[in-house]
Length: 501
Image (tube, rainbow, N blue to C red):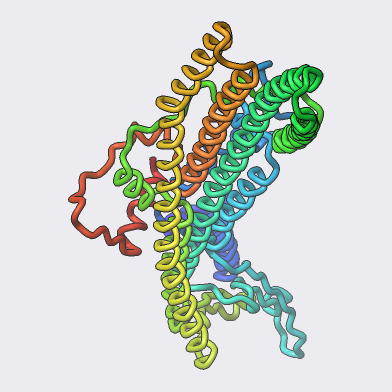
């Protein structure tokens, strides 16, 4: 098709206006051939990108809508007067610099796919020389023109370029998993900070109530001493009041520091107000059992997924090292005026045997190291998830026991002592002690809930999925007694499906 086009554009001969047949010199035809070849090479500059590149770019573009605008142009949502944890987390995702940096690292890795798989991989080189000779030759016949590829970089065999693109794609997927891990790590940090802030707020409130009760106790002790009671009761009450006042001031200072840290994560003014009363007003629950959570972790854990793609990349890099045994062929075209026309090719033989063998052995060693790391990451992740689940279930149990059993009993004790005090059968000190016991139970419930929130955030970071969306996932059915063994290829397939979701 190309030859017919050239023959039509520039035939071997043409007819003049006088009817004479004028033969076109081969040199001029070869010039056209060379120009067309050069234009074809430039227009054919493409990318031998491997399968899966477009899907990775779509995943990147879906996330990039948040981070492509600069921070000065980005509309960061303002927190409502009483924000929920979802409001705080949404702003953190848009404002956090570490997460934005992880996105652009991922984007750079995706762009390297096109660089690694670009073809041709060598620049076109145009040559010209003029021959000085005593022979009677016209000027054009003394000129030599050449078209080829850069002699400093061989034209690689297309399969090598495609394999290099596979290695780059694996590295981009690793970067994508690093971004996903950074997202859940930020989520864990924010939710943990919010849980700490909330429990400090509640502890400060309870300590203020406790301080008020201790002051009443001191006043009662003062009256008792005036009526002849022992002096040490008043001294003890005074020590308790001063100790409680110190605890309140310490908690208020810690509360201010915690608010500053949370505002820093949200790129807000450190002194900006943050009302914690509504942060965890709606309890976070998941109906999935422990087995379903463990199965989800096998497919979704970002650390495991990252090392799965790392192993895939090492395997592709090993194959690329072995492909260095394939010779490279670099074509060229040259003509000297109308005297000679040459079409040739230079073959680059793999004679650096020691270097190629060393690269293969290096790739094999790096593959073994990645496989060993992946194996250990699986065990470490499984152990961390199980330990987190154990702590989470214990926190849930403790909070449930105190809320459903102990809190009603403490409340009932306060009511009974109040009735007895009204009837004159109990003293005011007994009533104060009952009230303090109720406050201690309330504080225990708050701390148990805060520990539960921390474990939930840690579990989400290990799972690589929000627990609220885990219920909507279709979990695979599996025999609980069967051993679950995920090989590198099967895990890679699961992660590939997750990438395409």
